[in-house]
Image 1 (spheres, rainbow, N blue to C red):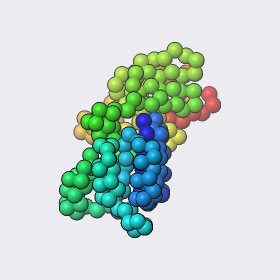
Image 2 (image 1 turned 120 degrees about the vertical axis):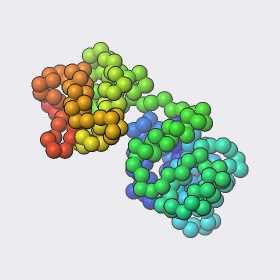
Image 3 (image 1 turned 45 degrees about the vertical axis):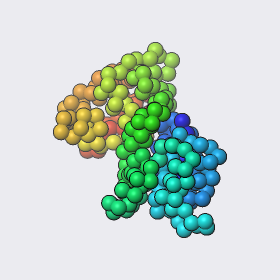
Image 4 (image 1 turned 45 degrees about the horizontal axis):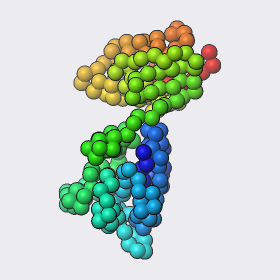
Length: 230
């Protein structure tokens, strides 16, 4: 699955590219409208993530202009990004053929969810990529996790959702509040439910649950997927 990211904010473009690569996408980058359109014509990606407010290059091409050129030739799914909150811009983007519209700032998780939804509607749903951290390999599509040479273990939907989120943030701690909201929704989960879920997930991946080497807890902060020497 191939994605084209067109944004003059290189830091943001690199962050989006990093997130999409972790989801299994091949990512192409462009930083202005003209080069973005050229890359689209050459590569014909499965989806385009397109900033509206692109720099005034020659020839001048903002995001709406790039979108118009794409729509004249194909129905490639396009998600527009912008800091603008004017309703007229949103309406213009959608009327011009954009499949979705995301306001900056946004979380990478939100953008991934929007991309997946757009691809599903377009009949181009992406197959979840295998995730790996050290000798821990997780298959989100099958909800299976394998540690080293051990046999794969099936996870429940909640266990799978938690491990998937931790692997997306591997090497960093995620707050308890963020985990609860991601797994259950803020109004449905609580700390005790999270502790029980962590215990069950550890029992499936940790060599010794009394001395975790993967899912670590930092009191006062949260949980993180780490890999320490046992």
